[in-house]
Image (cartoon, rainbow, N blue to C red; front, side, top):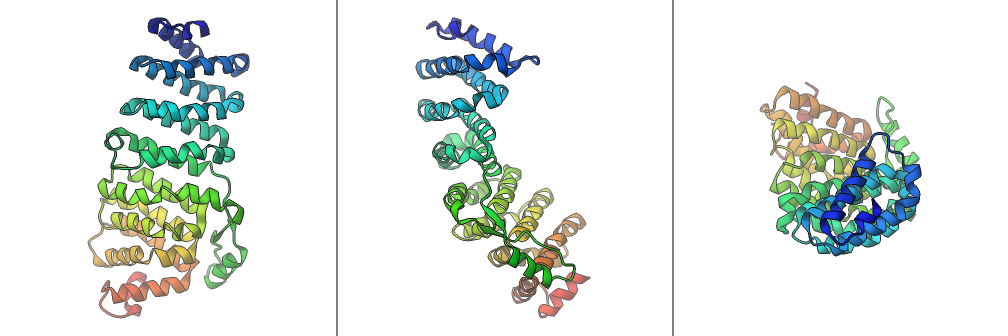
Length: 347
């Protein structure tokens, strides 16, 4: 079968790809016996992808490559960097071919899942791919790359090594200030992980343009913000804090009930991971939320799911909650002073 893949005739090469795809796709396939053939198989596939201009051959070859990554698992680890080195040239050669570039993004997702916490070694490949696939100025992004670019970013965040640790002093102080003794995550940055974290957060500015253009990808955006909050803790509200704020302001009060329900758990998680930093940076969002709750126009479902956000703030950062009530009163969310806001929320 490998000999067929190496044939210059496209029809013969396709038959070899089809046979290998059937072999690896079989439920009884085990990677052990195939492991010795992996270097040759990958070399032939990459050579074919670099040489052929036939779209059908390229699509099937990329499909086989993704299947190999998925099915061979740990046996593929020694060959990951060879694949990473070959993919940039294949990406450039696939310019204007969204279907091929989507398959490349899917392959990189699988490689990140395979490498896990060692995935920062792939960032020299991942970051340029994210920079392109999240840029709404490129026509092919809006035509199909965007969803896979967001999915790639989410996979990178979820497989990142620990960049933060719990700050015991901040957590204890927050717990002491709350009546229930609830201990928030209260994360702090591990200094050695700052370069990794900066790389992971570098695409955040693109999120505001994506959210303002359409709410189609809001579930992925919400998942990315949640993962970013857990990975980065208070760092998220530093250099890219204004972009996070812009995304949330584009959502809260401007989307359907379903969209609002998607974003409330994100807000609560942010307030849990970095209570003081998140509350201060996101105060305009929280003020708007209070105004919506007291405005009487939101559904019972929205109100019910929004109240835990404010409850989380009250438990994790009581002083910030009081400051929020004062800011909401000043913004006209309620007729009266800060105490009026508190009273209405309690009702």
